[in-house]
Image (cartoon, rainbow, N blue to C red):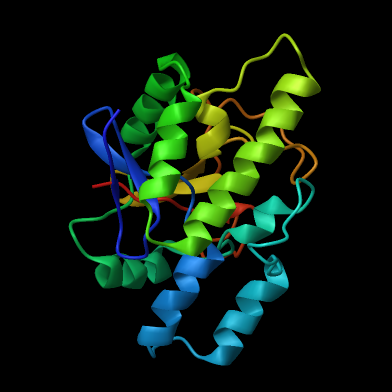
Length: 212
């Protein structure tokens, strides 16, 4: 497996002929963007945090890890982050997201690869988050369900993560399957889409990840 890093030091992996961010975009990454981009003020971000509050990347638990990620943000706002992060990043299409999901489901998970990715990252935040996630998921998946093996869908949080914004033609929709403890659902990401009832509705379980 090939990998790279974005300007924040968080990793991307090469899947289905695309580089895709290993995890949904975190608040740590987004706050670096906010520090350099002055369009969004403090009150705007306070409103975002009221939807899904912040948690320390050093001490997050298995119960609150979804709070690591920036959620409640709209596609029109994501575009500013994409312009800032540069290097041909964009939101995936629905077809691309599902192809990545399908491929990750097939690729055997190798802990050594993820450990090498962690070692190569220059971001202490990225290293800490991924290490803690790996520790939590190992316990949850292997020790609590002994017949189940850890896989790439687990560690990328494309399974039991967030609903993620994707493009389908001229519209933006959501796809994904959050943990029932975070947002109860019966969605199959290879079959179902999630469409907010209102165009500018901020939903605490909607996040995003980018591809290039």
